[in-house]
Amino acid sequence: MPRRSATMLAATLLLIALLCVSVLMKVPYTEMSPGPTYNTLGVQEKTGTPVITVTGHESYPVSGHLNMTTVQVTGAKYEPSLVNAVVGWLRDDVLVVPHDNVYPKGQTDADAKKQNAEEFALSEDHARTAALTQLGIPVGNELIVQSVTAGAPAEGRLHAGDRIVAVDGAPVTDAEGVAKAVTKHQPGESVVFTVVPMAKDAAKTDPSAARTDITVPTVKSPDTGSAMVGIRPGVRHTYPFQIDIGLQDVGGPSAGLMFSLGIIDKLTPEDLTGGRFVAGTGTIDDAGKVGPIGGISMKLIAARDAGAEYFFTPAANCAEAGKNTPSGLTLVKAETLDGALKSLEQIRSGQTSALPSCAK
Image (cartoon, rainbow, N blue to C red):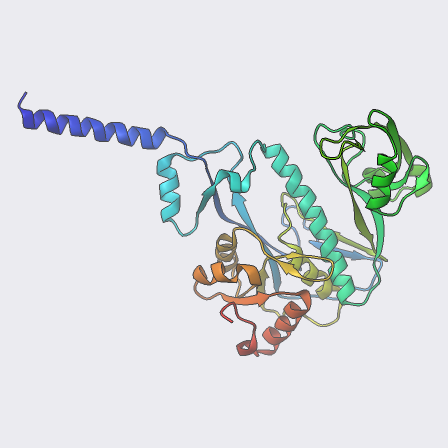
């Protein structure tokens, strides 16, 4: 075979081999894309029930949209091929990020789902509290199991959401009291928790009848050497009336701001949107401070595709959002719940030139 032909054949075979490798070789990345948006003032498509339902307090008609936004994420086990990753990097509607940024090492889909559900429940709690505090409605507190460490003695005995009434028969009202009661024991001894299980609490069972004593053995803490059971106590708020937030297959903390706005809209006679289509994202704390989220560029696309005109953007996400704003969507910087309410007043009155901008 002539040298030139042999060289061309070798080059062709090498190219084919490289293409095969790029198609078959997996790379440690995760892909994000725009997810569905949900109008917190509307109803759920699957059930036809309102996203936010108020019971035991007067509520008012609402109009327009206050949409929370989501991001679709590939599973923990999924790793794209090199070709797919490159295609994703070239697309505007796909975000390719290192796998460990989304799924910490060793985290499974089940772990991620559990974490997202816990974050979502906590976000709902913050949203209710921030909204009622903004309206001057008193909010109470109760002590709960915030989380249970996998593999710890408490796993399978205590559950996230269980209400803690007493430890070893002594009433406790805060996380410090729980820690003191547990560390009085020597590692290996048992602690008796008096709790109202989350399921019974949710069913509004008579609290005295629902109380259960649960014995949990202790182990030696690898950090302090003292006794531990493997729970993180926390505070859950109580409210003078019921506010249900019902969304299926949604997780994470990023809907807090939009839930708070939706709750306030339902509890006040003022139509917050004036019929306009507003979307947004952002965590919320009890005091109404708006926090940053991930996947902002994908949420902007989801909002614009849904028909949004304005998008509430956490201040910390403004720089990234400003580089990826879809045509026709106005970014509105959101730092606090009170500030977002003032922005809605400007939107419905048509004074949009005064809106806080991500460029400022």
